[in-house]
Length: 175
Image (tube, rainbow, N blue to C red; front, side, top):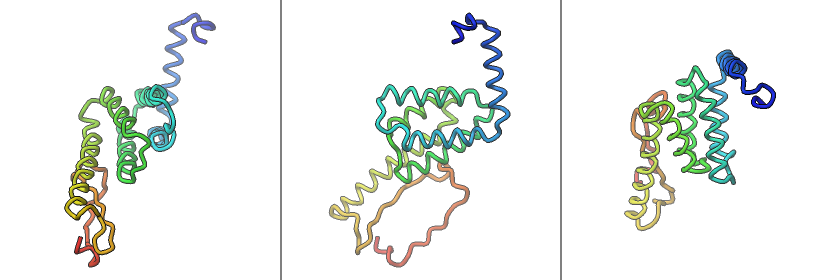
């Protein structure tokens, strides 16, 4: 449309870009809404799509992210949703999650996505430790009728507001 109707006029394109940037600045809740949208895409929206389609959708999200002036607000909300997806095992694709983080790494730098990367390492460590535990317990994670699963999370890497005191119920002491 820009090529045909506006002859690729640079003033028009700059005006369009400035208007869009101003729109994004005025919408104070936009970073949170974009984080919710991203979460939804990574939970259900990408289901059944080809790799090329997933790449296209994630690239579109990152392009919008690049226009945000409140990137830190989006990253904080995105990290919280990522933590929930990882802990609730509600991801559509681990590859899509890693692709999204690699795109953020390019746009924001490694320091911004360091916690997210560490969260993935924690989940992998948890899987390995759980597998060793099951092997140790003769192939079952059921101890005295209690199914035992755990996640090992590195302190300071997960978006938790306050530390939680863990009081193990009497029934779980054998575990």
